[in-house]
Image (cartoon, rainbow, N blue to C red; front, side, top):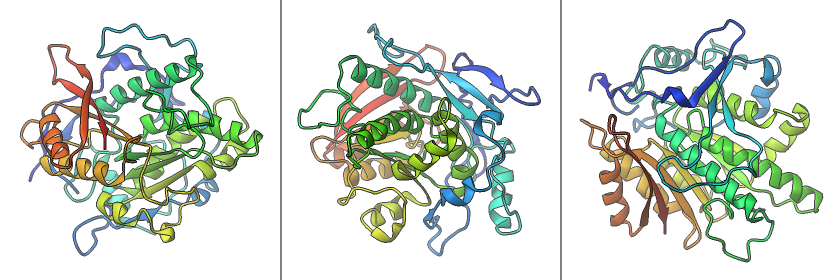
Length: 374
């Protein structure tokens, strides 16, 4: 299938000042796509799993994160709802995103010429390269919707003093259990991973508190994307930009290895290996392969990807207490994905859905945010 243009732009009001050594603007304007694709094809046409070794990349880091080119995205309250949400308990109001041309880690281009070729193609005004690249270098607008909602939940958790190491008392908050000691979060198709970064900022705080109390069971956030170069060029840099703002970078990096992992490759291959101890992440993963919080933004853009997202939630949400948050456009015209396709696939697996937010400005495609439980 040839290239396909959706025309969905990241809302410019969410993008504030650009921090660049050469004063460039770094707003993603294009929304071209075609169909699904991978770095290096495996025999069955799917991307084989690969673990991103953070130690390797961190040892080749070009300068400190604060010196990289980046921009900021403002977190907003009450988007998609008429409710007034109290946010004063949150100390941060924005998230940083790397300029993907920055590439802050040394890359041996001769080691993997195919990956370099795909990475260069991905930067040339295309969203999807079928079978090769899944759009991870772009910041998609539904990921911002998900960030805003997560921010609300985190602020609510803090204002109600729910941020606790004790999960014995169930609380009606979508992030509280995941951010408690021993909680597990995964972001599917993370790309720039801004929703995951927001959760990780809080997970690092819980880790600090748990360590001071002699409890080593910290929350864990797993980041997954189809392409390893996306994890290298935008995911890991965004993680570093958002968690090293005020603290000693070396201390933060030591903690980071215990609370996060990065895995590239096909989702369903990851699904089959989540309980496999040979996966090799530096952080611990849930023994039963089930997570307290599963995040997904714009992963439902075709009928097949909508089905895969629903199946992943069915296989890996904790029964009863697990929460899935899926941000999607209501329709992806021409490719069959969106809310309806995802809802139908979810119902077929017995998943319980609640429509948390509807984003409708009357001019662009309606966007939805779904809560999913098993």
